[in-house]
Amino acid sequence: MIKKYLLAPGPTQVPPEVLLRMAYPMVHHRAPDFGPVMEEISEGLKWLFQTRNDVLIMASSGTGAMEGSVSNFLSPGDKVITVNGGKFGERWGKICKAYGVNAIEIKVEWGESVDPAVIAGHLERDPSIKGVYVQASETSTGVAHDVKAIGEIVKSYPGTIFVVDAITALGVFDIRPDEWGIDILITGSQKALMLPPGLAFAGVNDKAWKMNETARCSRFYFDFKKERENLRKNTSAYTPAISLIIGLQYVLKMLKEEGLENIFARHKLLAAATREGIKGFGLELLPKSAPSDAVTAVKAPEGFDGQQIYKRLREIYGITAAGGQDHLKGKIFRISHMGYCDKFDVIIAISGVEMVLKEMGYPGELGSGVRRVEEVFIKD
Ligand SMILES: *Cc1c(COP(=O)(O)O)cnc(C)c1O
Image (cartoon, rainbow, N blue to C red):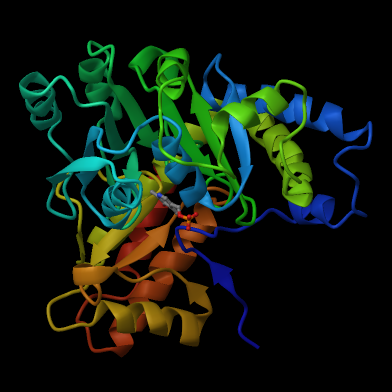
């Protein structure tokens, strides 16, 4: 038997209590007892999103909310900025293209975060830009973009919305859409929210809703206005992902019990310990600065294949981490510490990395990474 440990940046581990809730007999979404559940999670989502605005709930993976954030607010031919600092930033550009939206792509070396001044420059030169689309945490590289600073810039353009994919940021570190000028904030269920895949969320403010009135991109399933009308009646336009919503109700209870500050502090500590453990074993991190507290991207040492490291972790030790994507494939591997994670998840990951690399002939000293992790934890 090989015991399994899920330490990938999505899907992430689901707490047993949540799994049990979702295994209860199916309820009907038009039956009277489902409305109060919707009402409760709507309020809970506002708390989690730190917003006064409605948070829409859709039955899809996170990309559904990304797509809706383009199609509901823009018209074909509109000009927007997308930040491509990794696989998910690149996706913004692809979605725009599918809708005939003219995306000016700001290319950032994968592993670095965008310089907000570059965005400011584009907006100054061309105020007809309708939107700025970025990731708060670029999961493919383990880098955080400074969405607070970008929000400050976009705020002063009344005809430009700021859209943030916070799929591996919300519930990991502090994001304040109402204060920071984030007009649309997105997340999904299978990352920090400790649920299976299948729910996408979008918090939308008045500035964005105003753009929705004139947006002409075609849309049907992801019709945000229709979803808002239904949400306000504690229901949804189509059959919701009922089991996941029941799970979310319990997740929100768990998160509220822990409190936002403690959630952010826990992720900060686990991320710091992971980075220290990696460095303690003599390895390097991919991010040059601004590493995300959700996931740690590690460079495979010279002469070692990152895909092999990640494969061996899974096949020999039952640890599912992640490899690199596109040109980073083979060059890096990634360890998640978001969601239902605590100190021993980090120890498992670092210990696994040490054993795998040692077996592959890497000269690091066994235990040197784990030792650093433990030092970080006991000092705390
Ligand atoms: C996981 C993820 C997504 C969405 O991917 P789905 O597979 O559609 O859920 C989008 N952006 C980021 C940053 C992600 O980590």
